[in-house]
Length: 368
Length: 69
Image 1 (cartoon, helix red, strand yellow):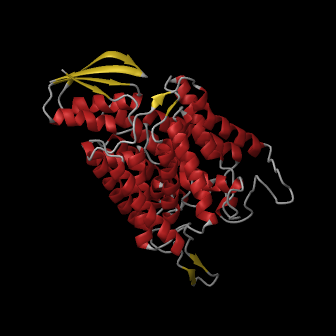
Image 2 (cartoon, chains in turn yellow, cyan):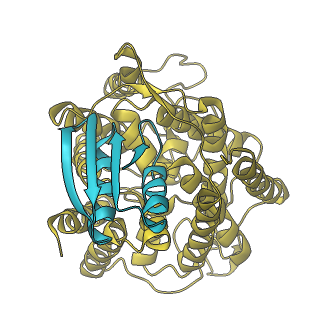
Image 3 (tube, helix red, strand yellow):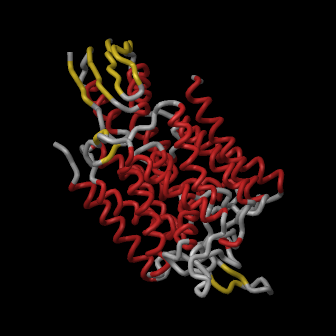
C-alpha cells in the first residue's frame, strides 16, 4: 500500500477515535462529530431556528474550518477561488442538509452510527451508495457545474474563516445579544444541543481533524465515487479508518449496542433512512464532496464550498422552522415506545423534491 | 500529443476527462491543472493505467503533467 493510502487510513482512524473520545467527554451518543447536526446546532445558536434542544455554537465546526485554513496556509494550498454556479451550489447545500436531517446525520455520522452498532445507519449507507452511484451516472454523462476562477484578490477566501473566528469569540465570551429573548447566542438546556465536551477540547479536536482532513482529502462521497468511477480505493480507506477507529473505542468504552431500536438520535423508518442519505449522496457527488469536504474547502479559500456551507446552515434553519427534520425514536420510562420517530409529511415531501431537483440539476448541467 | 486543461474543474471531473482520453487510447497527453488534489488524482490514475508521468511544471497551484505510454 502506498504512502498516500496510509495517510488517508491513519487520518480516518484518528478521526474515528477522536469522535468517540468526544462522546466520552460529553458530546451526544454516536455524535462525536456530525457536520450536519453541528451546523444545525450553530443555526440554532444564532437563532435562525428556535428548536430549543438543538442550539449550540459547536467548536468542532469552527475548529475544522480554522484547522483547514492554518494547514493550507502552511502548505501554500490556500487559494481564493469561486464562480462555479455559486447560487446553484448554495441551493444544493440547502437540500444536502434536508437529506441529512431526514436521515439524522451526515455521512461521517453514518459511519460513526454504524460503529456504534446502529443498524439503521447500514440502511442509510445503502441509500448513500445508491445516491453516489446516481451522481456518478450524471458525471459520466458530462455533468459539470462549470470552472471556478482564481480570484483577483485573496480577501474573499478569508470570509468564512473570519466568520467562524467571530463566532468563536462570541462563544468564548458567551455573548447574549438579547437577554430578554435568552439569545442569540442560544444554548440548549436539554436535548442533544445541551450535550457537549468542554469548549477547548472540542475546538482542539476540530483543529486536529481539520488538519488531518485537509492533508488526506478525506471525503465520504469521494470514497465511494472513486471506487465506482476509477476503481480507486484511496479515499474509501478514510471511510474504513473512521469505522474501525470508532468501533474499537466504542467497544473499549462500552458504547457499542447493536440493533435497530432505541439507537441514540436515530429513527427506524428504513425508507427515509435510505432516501435521506440518498439525497446527501447524489448532492455530495454532484458538488464534488461530502459535507465534511465542503467545510474543509471553505477553510482553504474555496468560496463555492463556502456557499454550500452557508446553504447547509440555512437549510438546517428551514428544516426546523418548516418541520422537515426527522424526530428520533423515543420511549417512556416504562420502556414502551412513545414514538417511532422519522420525518413528518413535509420532511418526506422535501426529501423527494430534493432528489427530483438533483436529477434536474444533473440533466441541466451536462456538457456535450 | 493531446492537451487537456483541467484548471478550475471540481473533483472528480479532471479524472473523468483524463480517463476519457486514456480509454480512447491516447498514448501522449499533456494535462494542465491548478489544484493539488487534481494533481494527485490525475497522476495516480495515469500511473495505475500504466503511463509514465513527467511534471513539466510542478507548483501547487500551477502544474503541467506529461503522461506517456
